[in-house]
Length: 191
Image (cartoon, rainbow, N blue to C red):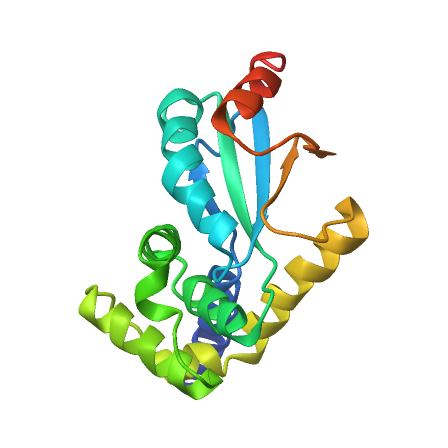
């Protein structure tokens, strides 16, 4: 009887852990009135610029105040971005910190002549940055791989995403140039 309970416990624990791996990477209050979705690729220099120049202002004025939340969704443009997205998604409790670090120091890990070179640089960068990651398990996790690819498919299907970063505000594609001033104007209309 104890074995049956143990097996049931292991089964449900694995389901809970699997679902935990596929939660959204979010910044801001979960019940915020405004939902900003950002489709991005971790090797995209424009996405890195967004994280460096726009996101901190959005965080200060809208996310930290509870007015909005951001969901970061994956739209990898190459294999290096795909693997980096799997790493961030695999470590959901550190996902936001991993994304921020990868974008802010993009030039330190996005280099190499092959995918293996870039993966080696990514792994070394994450270790040097203090993240505790089972790199091989994350890269080879089929559920996380499907999750990342489904973000890209849903972005294309639902919002006609074809470049990164692409921003969606309350389910409407943001069509202006992505800078803080333009985003602020759109967000202020929704408050």
